[in-house]
Length: 240
Image (cartoon, rainbow, N blue to C red; front, side, top):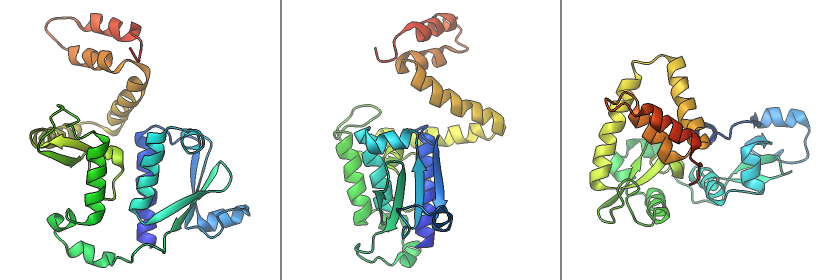
């Protein structure tokens, strides 16, 4: 259970970072939580406190991200409860069917893709995409792509927003391109990678998505329209 708990915590932290909602959010081991002498969650496996983006998602919020959060927790065999609006306790779901995870390591990846836990998640990703390729719009030969991998994770232990419904052709092309991008990142220092992270997170939030990528695509063009694309990006409304 400890290994599952630690994987869940790591996956939640990555999901929060990816969605830029980590601010005002803190993770507590059960030992740290008991020291606070709070009213709730004293029998939980770990606790999150939040007054930032996660607080608004769980209490007021974005239904899509709320469902993504729930899916992550359930994928690792846990459930969560709100105590106060600002604290969340996580509990191992003992009512789930007992699965011998020690045997997972000896299964092939193909075997794991037949697991009902992956089949259910794969079908949910396709349903959320309305059975269309999320890159080209095709409706045939649909597959589900993991946009990244983490050591020790099972195929179903990934957030929904890290999975993408793609046709077979786009799946193959995207996998190759993502490998090239990771290879190019190898030439960058950590501080340069941090700048790329900020560029992707803050610019997509601040500017119209189409205009932003048109500007990026214009950088270094021989046509010399970079200034024009930059001005368009600054002036066009984000949601227009």
